[in-house]
Image (tube, rainbow, N blue to C red; front, side, top):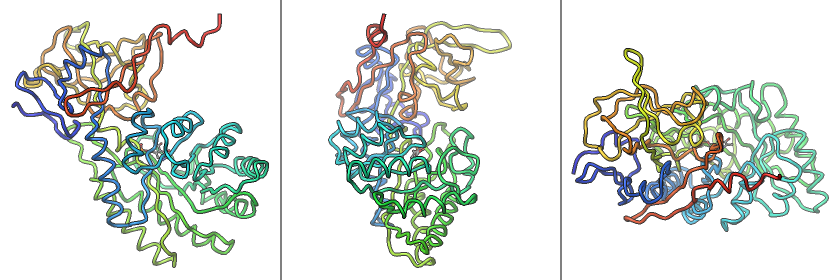
Length: 438
Ligand SMILES: Cc1ncc(COP(=O)(O)O)c(C=O)c1O
């Protein structure tokens, strides 16, 4: 069988078959495109399960009291949520919608953590009514609101406070969250975090079980995590004088995945080693016991498992400038390149064995010049009707999808052992008008 180029960006089961076609989960993706249409998102079940098991194994081997929550924002889907619950992951949700998904998935509410910098009254009521495990409080406004709602409901709600440790994680500005100038969390530097701890400890219907921080996403360096943990734990030690008991510490998500063939982010074991080492030494140094340790991977669970498929259409050559190859999807299903200059590899899925002798810019079909999926990428020569595969498309594509230009959002299939199961059907034109009132 021909070799798979750039293996590091593909799902674990990816292969090239004797006809030179990309195969994932035992399914020929060209047949999937014919059966389900394009754009199509394909998720490999094996890669998803491997990621869950690897996170649990590597972190618990070093710090047994680790709990892994899936950050549902990376890709929210019922079949996926059930699979992840089956693998023993909890869930981090950030909205009433994600909360409803968690509820429908059958996960225990105690395994659900509710984040967000501006949760609405209704969302907080829904969380309290369902009995979510933790509400991760992000502002003093929320502390007041939640205390009132919990009192009305005659409940005591476990909470964590989201701390902003002031650490730059060296990633894209739009996915940096733990610096001083951020909308998220209580800043340690300004004294906000201290005020929040005191306010939380004096709230009769809130039980402060610990602190949380999340400094950003797609973090290739482990040092910013270590620094954020040291700052958060040092702060927690200072807060003992007010009565803070640290039963939980959340370190967020942000573990990087390879999008390009030359990217080598730390392995899960390397992240686990770095985080657990710092955690254990800081806990010891500061005289803490062993709090539960919470991590929230999103991208690293679903990103590598997903591949986007498109059909090639028009080609426009501008001599000496650039060649545009248009496909039938684009910014409507994947806004990441337009939003934060995200880069991808691209392949002609029906000719994986052909050398990449062409250089093209893969454009979407939306009415925006910025609707470019991949700029100046080497690709095998292609023709209309060929199938383009964009690997590492499992995170933050579908959940950010829009209906711009009245485009129905794509179908999604989960593949395993040669079987493809539809986990979200393609939207219809009727769906697009179903909420209009005329
Ligand atoms: C609080 C929190 N936890 C976890 C995540 C997941 O991050 P990632 O998908 O990079 O792992 C995010 C992402 O924004 C987040 O805000």
